[in-house]
Image (cartoon, rainbow, N blue to C red; front, side):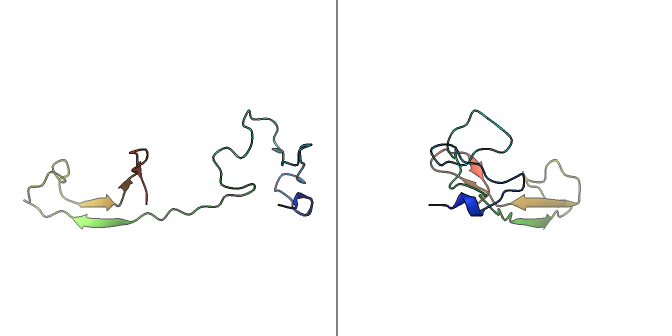
Length: 90
């Protein structure tokens, strides 16, 4: 159980509904409950992105470098989720 009386938001003091849930300080949005968030209040997240530089060797034939004339190719690590089959940053 969260004690909302002792907390403050950036906007104003936290106001709760009659059933004890915090209300949006900017007004109604049409979303009830937490939506897809894991908890009430801030849901901080950090997503590290892994990249590497891959030098392009002149004269080398590769499907990755077909459209690049010299320079550097950047590659990023990504995963395909099993549940939704969408690509995501791990």
